Length: 123
Image 1 (tube, rainbow, N blue to C red):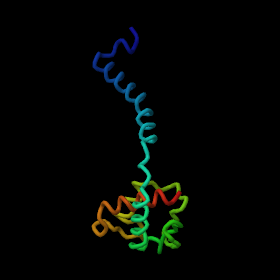
Image 2: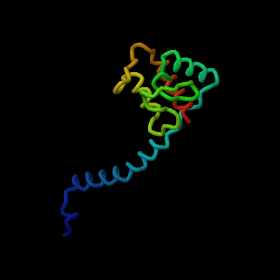
Image 3: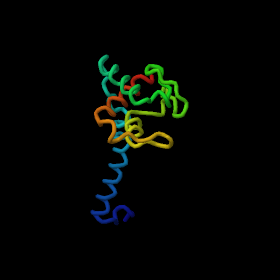
Image 4: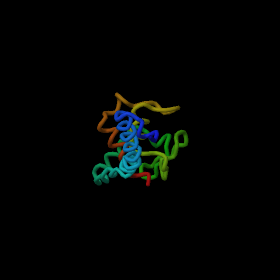
């Protein structure tokens, strides 16, 4: 009798489920990486996002050419491939390092719009 044959049906089922999950994981990760991008902002939303960027003085610390930002305290946003929408929302909301958090000061909808603007404008 082989070792596998000697295993209980319950153990075989658990091993099979584990193997199936291991095979499905790369597909799930690929799906997450290939998630559809947020739709492009309309011209009106870009104007509103740029206004938020300027009204909250983001350009005093960050470089973002579209928003006339020329600061050197925070990271440059232009061409920065290390940031995505979720990270920008988190940083605006909670802050990090010298950047203060603006959660509770900027409405959530405006934070979402500002993050979308930054991601679209930084390209």
